[in-house]
Length: 143
Image (cartoon, rainbow, N blue to C red):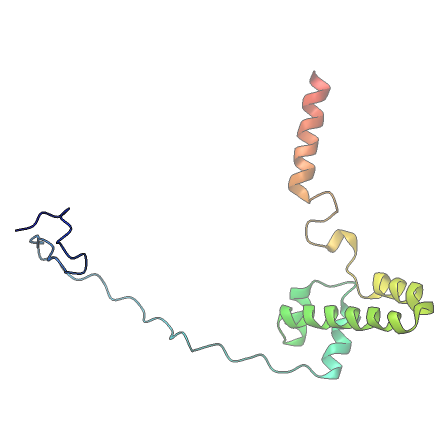
């Protein structure tokens, strides 16, 4: 008989693994069946022009979640309306460069959330960054 390192042993021959006896245990509790990979949630209903107008009117003063709840849409649809509107306005400036300043001012004033309402609260990285900055400043003051 050939040894395992022998050139005459075919690497393609399947060897049987030793079988260890396993103790019989109770089957685990049945889990809820998973969704089939092809199943998806039903898509959200398409937005109407009125809903889009309401989204644009509420943006400067209201969070995405609040807008979505008021209008019965998703916060992703709110974001899509805003991003799409800004994108189309900025694309218009390519054709009419004289409108660039007016459009950017409109976007800043009417289509952007106020600085304090944005995620993170500020450009400095949010509450945690400010807390770290305060801690570091107090340590330096003690030195």
